[in-house]
Image (cartoon, rainbow, N blue to C red; front, side, top):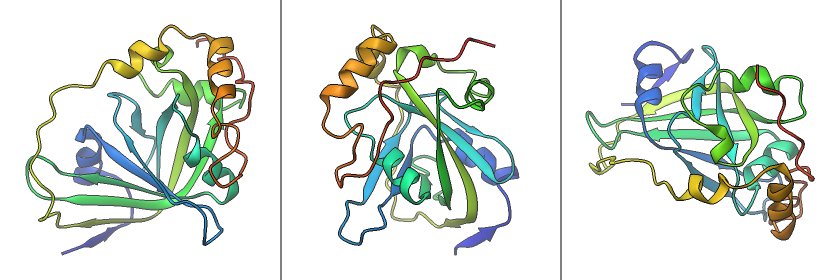
Length: 197
């Protein structure tokens, strides 16, 4: 059945890098707060940084719950399911941090993502997760589903925005600068993208 891993490498790393979608779960400290679960799946937006750290690109959306929860307490779980091939589920439980565009680490981290045009998706931050517990389980109940392609809608919607129009879009949304539970979310106005390296 389930197994615990010391690091993200070998077959485990290959498995999570091959999945077209994963899920990120966070929650506020308040027991009555809103638990958040988000699908992530733009091709090329996930990378393994080293044996204990992974990162993904946080793109424009109508809320910023993950960012808000990570700013408050850092708790996060990422989950990958095998919808094709042998049944498997992998979870990385750990601490996460949103690295914003004005952070000195941002440009270097962004350089690790080579396969996605981040300018087309309204990139807000890079989420870096440090694993504290890595486990897999059988996945016997996960259905077979096929991956056809990424939906083009997100890129079409946000490719026409620059930093000013993205900030204006975010300012109109109720739960970007502040979470559903009133926690600080995405800092606005959005800092400019650092120069390309």
